[in-house]
Image (cartoon, rainbow, N blue to C red; front, side, top):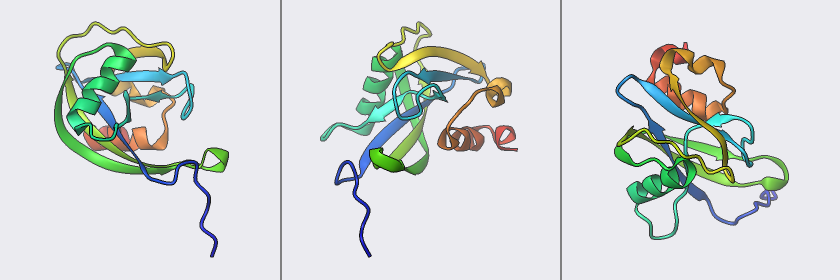
Length: 144
């Protein structure tokens, strides 16, 4: 059997910060680049070789939305294989995080908008399956 050809010949490991404030609002960003361009996700990205996971989370959140965070516990791990020409295999680590401050300054090269969304309003946003799944783990009523 022929193995599919992938864009990178290794699995890309990424981190995503599920940033939840004291009012149980979640920070969502609308992607301005692929993958998931135009959809709402939580900030995150690839871990650089030799970079500790918590440092990667803090760096990615700072790069995308200019926010300082405290990294909490691992929520879950999600696997994503992109179809078609972009064939990439990702392992994504989702961590619960808390904002240190609320001053958002999104990077338009990656994010077109960044907003705090009340847990009861999450269903109104167009999200990838992985994002919905993780938010359903954090907020069980969202999964229902």
